[in-house]
Length: 216
Image (cartoon, rainbow, N blue to C red; front, side, top):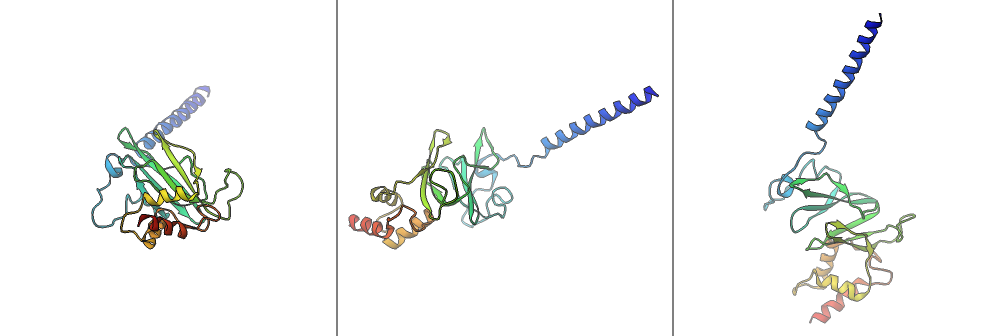
């Protein structure tokens, strides 16, 4: 009788062990995120015809938007947006393999639109997150920036809203043929302009006119 009980217990332990081994094997062989290697997350290089990018991987049908690659092509930053909540996500190529999408360290849950600078070292975005990072979302949206330090992104800072700083921002996206209208369109593409985004009392139309007049 004792021998029979021991046999049953031993068999149960063996079955549990084998089940754990098989589960681990399945987890290794069938990861929840595919192994991606090479440029553009192992996707077909972009051409002249618009196509959905990385379907089921980056483009999942949950309102992904404003995607930007760093100049070296090794990091993709994009937003996952569902009003009134938006977060920044990124994937990185490390040792030739792309990581899973992760929420960026600086990203809160109250972000609006944003974009990356051409050099890949600065992200400008609008948000109504509390200025001290605590409490309820604000009624107004403000412009914030976050800079990349070495390989990591730093802490976000509220954009200095003086006219000279905003003029520098405009100068970085303009060309000699721009009018006030086209500059405003570029700013809107770069960052979702809302009332008071650059600070209370900042009139972006006046600053654009000042920029156009000084360029003549």
